[in-house]
Length: 354
Image 1 (cartoon, one colour):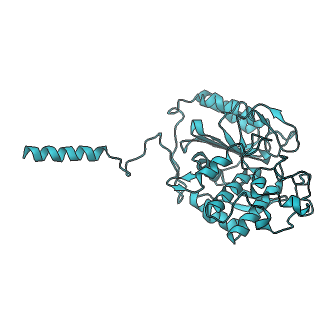
Image 2 (cartoon, helix red, strand yellow; image 1 turned 180 degrees about the vertical axis):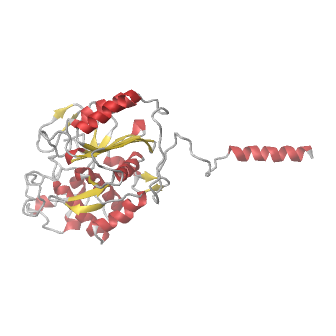
Image 3 (cartoon, rainbow, N blue to C red; image 1 turned 180 degrees about the horizontal axis):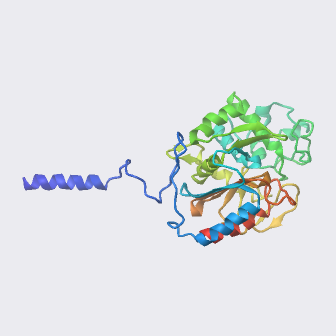
C-alpha cells in the first residue's frame, strides 16, 4: 500500500512539472490582445523601474510637437498611452507612408501562399508595358526592386502613372524614395485575383484585430486606423510576423524585410527604415549621410515612418513598440518620412525608460 501511495505521489509531482498550456502567462511573457474585444493588458511604469519624473517632460514635448496620440508597449502590454488635442482611443488617423510596411507584409503573405515570387519581373503580374521605359529596361524591374525603392524609375513626380514612370537608371543601381511602390498593391490584386483591400483584410487586418480602412489619397492609397491598431501591427512586427500562435507573415520573409535590402542605402529594408547602420539616405535626394538614422534610438530599431511624423518604432532588444500619430512635428520643416523629430523624441523616451 505504501509503495502504491508513493507511486501516485510521484506521478502527481511529475505531472505538475510538465508544461501546462492553461497556466496563466507570467507578466514578462509576450502578450497579444484579443482580436474580438478592445481589452488590453497594461504594465505599470513602476514595475518596469522607469523614471516616472521624466514622463511629464515627454508629454510636454509631445504636445509641443503636435502629437495626437502616443503609445508604448512592452512585451505587448500597454506601459504608456496618451491622447491629446481631442484625439481619443477610437479616433481614426492616417498612417501616410508608415502604411508602406502594411503593403510589404501583404506581399510576403502572397508569396508564402505560392502566388508570387518577388524575384520575378513585375511585368509578369502587371503586364508588359506598365511603364514608359524601353521594354528591355522594364524587364529588369522585379517586385523586389519595388520593395527596396530601387526600380530606377523616375521619382520627380509623386503621381504614379504610366507617363510618369520613365527611365532614370537600371533597376537595382539607384535608390530613391518614391511612390512607385504602390504598384505592389496592383501586383497583390493580380496575383490573388481579388482586390488588394479584400486580400489585405482577410490575410492580415482581421487576423490581428486591426480596425481601419484604405482610402484614395491625393498621391496614393493611405491606411487609416486608430492608435491601438497601429500598435497591433507593431506587435506583429516585434514578433517577426507571428501573432500569438499563428505565423501570419513568413518569418524568413519578415526578417528580410527588416534587414538591409541593398548596398546603396543600408538603412532601408522592404519598405521599413532601419537604425544602427553606417549610413543612410532620405526622401527627396541622392545625398548619403554618415552614421545611424536615429542616433538616440536603440541600434536594433526598425521603423515604419510616414509624412507628418506618423511612426511605429519596433525595438526587439527592449521588447518594445512605440507609436506616434499626429500632425507635422515641425511645420517649418515638413518631411515625407525621416525627420529630426525622431532623434529629439528618443532623447525624451530614453529619459523615461533608462
